[in-house]
Length: 556
Image (cartoon, rainbow, N blue to C red; front, top):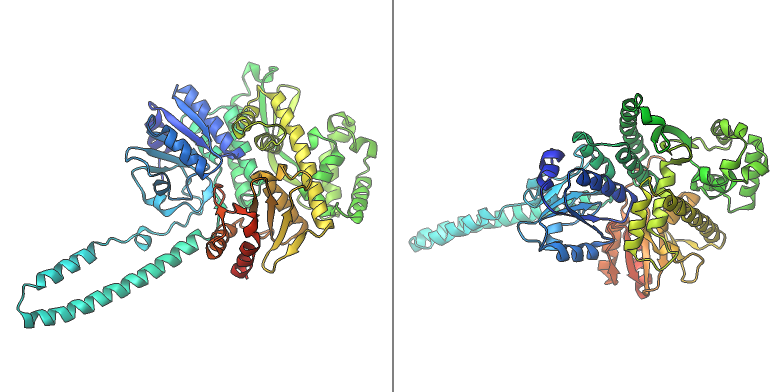
């Protein structure tokens, strides 16, 4: 059931209760979790935080906590499956689901006792009507009852009645078959594409705003949550621009509110500003040359994996009139005279080279006088910490580190995340160049396919869903068609990621999730659909060829 009043139907319900927070491993979910934690601390609400990476962990976490807790808050997980069917909870368990995954399962939508959906109704949900997908069986019971009553009538009369009853039953069965066929068609149309709705962090920030407890930190986390959706290509450009405008109004309100405060320029102050900044990843924490070289947008525009592309990059730098000595040193060390109008200079030269969208609406933050970060810097750094493959840290340790990096008191942790993010971006760029130059990307008819073997450089890094998805999207933009990225891991399985077609008007709807299910079903391939994104699955290595054959047939 969709909740109409998030304050009354959610926050006031859990205000005096103990709550379990079940949080998915993505940046938007982490930001939403930070906002909710801050609100719970304000009102001294007791909670237990449990990170869950997939459906199996979600089920295990529920079993461990269902005796002690009645209320469960699921962040970026749980909306796109029949949760009651999966978890089999007691009647008194209540689930509050704030999830960006679409489509929302119809049973979750129409269950008004245990499932409460904290989801924006103005998103394009297109939920089928109740009567089209649920049908009461009472009529059938009544008809069979009538027939048994007729048994007490005289035999001649009964025969006439029986003829009418048989006709009625045939008519009923025909109507039922038609209704079921129509139902299957409606559900297929509704469920065939996977896509994403409004950021969970934005939803909880709106709750904080309604409660008049919103702070600049919460606003910054909401902005990072939205930027995560843009960085990982989960929402359309139109949706991003619309939500950025909403956030800009909140930023203006907060900045206006703090104008007269004496401590607005104190050493530990926080200032958020709207920026029309460059699409160069981490450029303020790197050299300009390395950022241009390893950013997906510029790398794909110049085709930097070719000699011609590298030559074009040199021409681009010359066109801007920037000395190589300046662009190859850290951004912070560049001459102030160059930095002052750098954005305008880059934009002017980019237009000549066909990069019309080199600048993007975003937000920046100053922590005190020294530290400045863009929202996309925060996303890349936090994602690198969350999926760190550096040490033998568990996924829970990585989750806590990533959560800590979002706090402005942990700047050192954030800088270590930025260092990891740089390594990840370099690895992605090198892998893309390697895949293209060695023809690892094969055309399989309806889709393109790339297989990274065990032993490929940085293969451990790409065994993580976000890193692998970024790699696939980078490959896709390099080839401007649609792709299907696959990677081998230690368990004798491959991770399969499906990426939808790339175009300027793309609606970001992904059909691979449903296609994977059908292909696995038709070939009895051993697959694990454990990820919250249905377009990411694990597949037994031996079943790879028959699974792909089925996928080719299905999508042809």
